[in-house]
Length: 603
Image 1: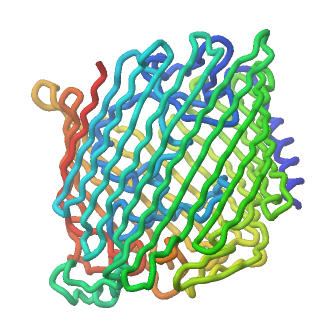
Image 2 (image 1 turned 90 degrees about the horizontal axis):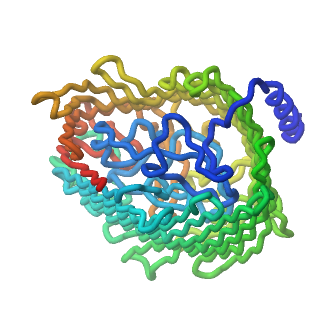
Image 3 (image 1 turned 180 degrees about the vertical axis):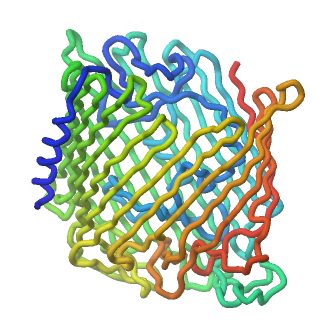
């Protein structure tokens, strides 16, 4: 059955779910006011994320102060944030090992800093009654430091300004493995008293600097050949990578009179650059430079029944390396339809690029449904079907660095995703996913892009939990994955991340205390390894990594608005052997002692 016929059939199946009437599960900016769910706070203590193609705000989020969160000094450590492989140092390049459909287009290559960097979709826009600030700092024995600051306040009714600045420095366990990262965003947003006019603006700046060690000799490390990690010879001694991005966008929405709907105009400019330098080479390699100017105009109806959002996006895109550039001008119409009943929400979205070049095949279609069994959505079932066609990233089609050159004419990559799932009592969520990939592209062990003609099937089950039993708390995710071609999509069969803690109070209940453990495990598989010069992960069949249980011990205390933690990470490193790798040639960090604090101010 073709993908288009499958989409039509799926749409008919979802429509048959229609039952009683109620507001959609998502939250929206409707009519004359902000519509919030029962468990949301007032407009004075929320934030939301930007959506460029719609007048509606999909979801509002509360400012939270969870003690257990303070010891997650890296996004990769969070047990509710997916699974990643990384190099030896926190803050270094990483790659997700939980397969999913990437809905982005016009990328130079996969973003190896995505867990850390800011973008238009993940920055926060606040609306506050009182100014809000947060300071975070942590340090460890290996001189790994993290400093984060957030400040936001409403300077006028409905007008908010904010900034967030993150600094992550790490010396690394091995020679020449230092990381120095800085991520910053400044935001402003305005919502008129009756929601007639809304605007968001932001400047985003990301900087990532990595000294490239190239890893070490695995056999020497497994044999415990040297007395300390710093004594192991590294494969590169005078190389580094700089990744820089600067983005600016302005989005404005105006609701038309007499319930005629709303129009939204969004303008953005993005600039991304990667530079790789090796002192042993003749020159510095400008790996890539990518500039993109995007203008989006959309219309949103405010009808309570079948609200429609439609518009057109124009992208002027420039990819360049040191001797070639590619310019494209693309028009992409899109549309979104919502159908909301009492306990049922149906959503459909589609876009298709109009162009006479290879990007003319770019398209995305998604339909989803959510059926709740209670009025507060604690028990529900959901399903979705997505289909994407996209040109291979520029990196796979053309490259000209010092040691690697290629030019390829690849077919468009086609991906279908079918997902069904359920949420029970708001504490357990199960997702069953199926992916069908056609003409997948990857970087081979010989460091050359190849395309597989034909299909690859991926089957996936993900179970997430977040609940307490008396004084005990549990937060975690487990994933089972299988691909029928592990060279095309290498995945561990099982991955588990779990935080378990006990919470109690001391000193007349003035001191909240948590003592807990973090666990991480994945079965052995041929995980991708990393090329510093190309700035990309690539396939390898040299050795499997995994089948090792990582455990961290932490203690957290909360005094008023201050959260503090102490953590002992990987305390038995080396006692059970040295086979603790997430990426070939890059052993994970060993025993370390870390401390830190978070301080929130609302005044």
